[in-house]
Length: 445
Image (tube, rainbow, N blue to C red):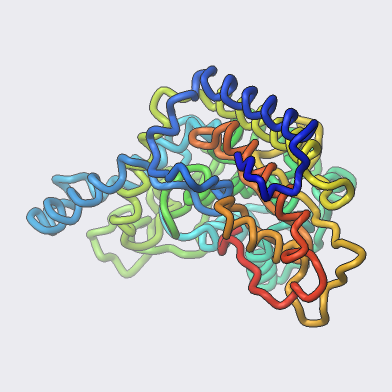
């Protein structure tokens, strides 16, 4: 936490509040079952990293494992590694490691391909399993854009309409003509957590399938795919699962639907006899149907090593710390930020909150954005990053701060809120003539 003489906060009551909050942060960081898991990651003490909801930090277990893969498995064993080093079975093996984090029994998760490709497989496969007479699919109206793009393409190929619906309205909008709904478990902009159990139940009552995007929930909070009766789900692994930039995504396919699932991408890796080279396609049994082509081994094995960071960790403890961190951050923001300059768009209700806090940045009335200039939120985030607090920015006015309980500390939350207060008071960032700088932010959703 900065308490420099240049701080715009007065040295009186404000500084006393800051000292109290810093002391509380230290006490909270010393307690709890996740007090030492930060040591499992490569982080630097002079930066507060609150962008794990876009790209997770590097687990210490990864570099050595990748060096072994490159030098020994690829460099020495070469082709033998498909069998001797277990490369061939990596997609299902790593799926089994992810399964407990998303509430899935064994045999229902396979890892491989990008999130977009898995969304296409799930939506198209779901459409093919839908009952006759279906004329539409529903898409979360607040979804990350790519999900919408892919869903529309899949629906167009099947001759179905796409209807965007707010998640809270799905139960009222689904009809017997609905094949499926593609829904985000957590809204990527606001951090709002949608009710998986209730939405899935409403879809099933109408005869529709439930397809869930877990990109912003897996690894941050308990997910109960089996318990909720979810049909298909997809998720990335480079956010809260810390698999690395562009690490492969995963596909969940409920056991009871696996025999019916017809992949729109029937690659040789999902063939019942992949080395038979039969010109006719016969799908493999079970979750192997979710495979497509040759696995991306380097990324897969980096992910497998990254998942070692979860050893001995209970997802319930992750959830408890996540909520405590975001509560504490909001409390500090209320204490440090100038009144009226930011407001939370993340639900206060724990039952409706993911693991991020999104703040709408309210422009200073005396400093309107210049035409063609960077929105005030973009300037604020750029300055936060320059001062060592890394979050990200979403147009037009949202500052996002992701809390990754395995390595984010309460001291991080306190320092980020303090620096945010400093930036919001700084006329060099929010004053007249400051609107032409670059906007910085994460590349991923």
